[in-house]
Amino acid sequence: AGKIDASQTCKQLYETKLKWMQSELNVEEMVNDRSWKVFNERCRIHFKPLKNE
Image (cartoon, rainbow, N blue to C red; front, side, top):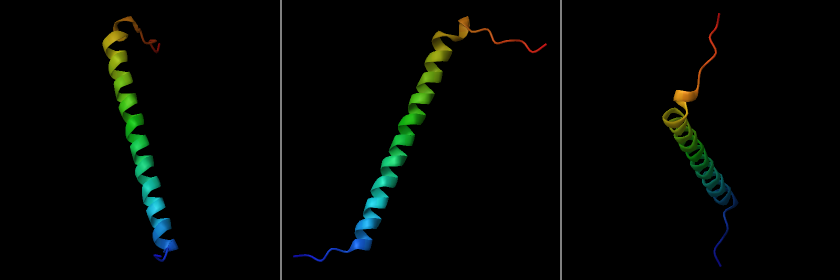
């Protein structure tokens, strides 16, 4: 049977978690970008920002 290296296993788990978190962040950024694009394309003509007087 192969010897289990705990430090290597922890490093691999950490790297996997880091990649997963980066992937989640990329998804969040894409959703945000697409949401703003849809808002600007479909809702902007109806949106009247408040004027600062």
